[in-house]
Length: 347
Length: 263
Image (cartoon, rainbow over all chains, first blue to last red; front, side, top):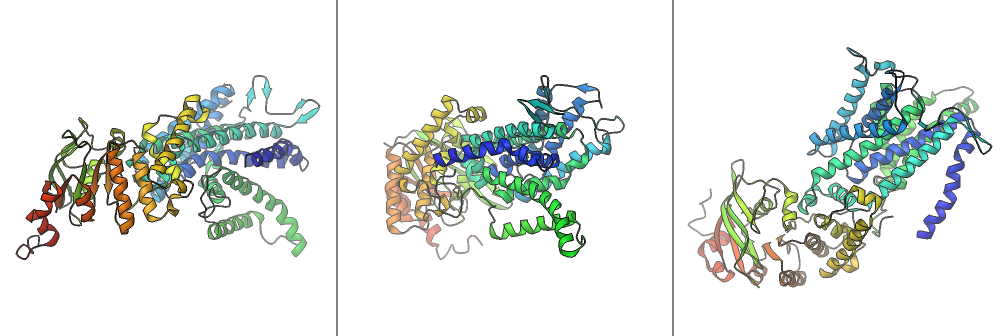
């Protein structure tokens, strides 16, 4: 088991490092898609703490992502003329998101399942509508136009925008962001694993399994739920900050309900509470639609001589179909933590 | 080993559900080292009493004094911290987790490790974690299901699930262990095994409050017994005396002339 995982890492690590260059052969657009996939892996793993470990169905997760993104956008763009450094904004964005997470968590402590889902869904929409309308009377968020010309991530003198030549290899901006995101994903995986196999993680799982029994053995369910919300939200905030810096532009449109649903679908489709499953879910749901977008038009022209179905609408159709199929045959997700009832220690 | 020092005192406890008087003015005390039985017909208020004691329900009236301290009524997790552990009438295990993990979670209140300890795995946190695993093994041995440690709790046999729930409760290091119908649904040999287990737990210094329908088990096991009927405490004494009490006999068997009393 131990040897196997090591072997897996030895083969996987060079592949992960080389991936942006392999994707780069197909054009920088593919590297950008790769970045997006990794960003979604990060988001999904953050949400996994709330949904997968603690079992709190959070449908408004994208709100924390939005808060992180707008924190970055407001503090590092010409909009307010502020250009704070990376290591100030990112913790600040995480902190704001964390604060909002607790704010959302506190009144919803007694809710579970569907009821919690509805309240969090409402919360997500409220944040988006705020972003949309906070341009009057005082212009804070610039409303639906969004905020432009956002600073890229800059650590000391090293900027993540533009090209950099390093030991004879030219790194493009998306390729540089890829490595930053990879580092962040490694961090969130580390935190996820460590928490899962700790007193805190077990308490979360206990709440997920049976809240009354958890209370009866002395788990302070209120504090534990707030902690889960706060931690999940912080990761959402960090992801948002990097997203804003990477895109250089944010608008409320990016934080719609569909996004929340997508991230949740990644967690559920992959396998709630199981880290490799969640990663798989996130990668599949970001990469596959892009593949489809590229493949559908040529395939259709080849078969019918013209484009019959718009790739965008077919994408949603296939996405829906995939969800139905997975729920029918693999209700615990594509790669769940414990298969069947064979028991054994979770890896 | 039974002392006369009260571990738990219930003082005029009352609980209503709308117009239903679930508990009315219950006062009793449980001495340290005792096995104390709580019996009564279905719906007499036994489980309600448990739920009030462990903070799941808030009684309208009355206070519990445990180990010299007044219990705060509205925080279930504090009951376990004070040293009251319970099992449930309809078993409530963490079904999707292994037996070992269930007992590990039980040690939550007796460990401290927080987020930072967990993430950075400090030496103190690692030591605590190792201790938790060791203790879980010990407890699984203690209730005799060590061979099932890696099995998911929901896959254990009914009797083993009962034992696992007791192990999980013991993991909180309780001074008082409350068992809610632990023998329900068990066959004769399983009940005999359970009896040995409960006696062993008492030997090791834990006071026990037992709700049970199996009258033979209660009468053979308990030092003292309280009888509830329609939310009222009708009798509290040694099993021998309780068995002869006319009101108890009436509550259990009914009597001709009093048949319409509650109509």
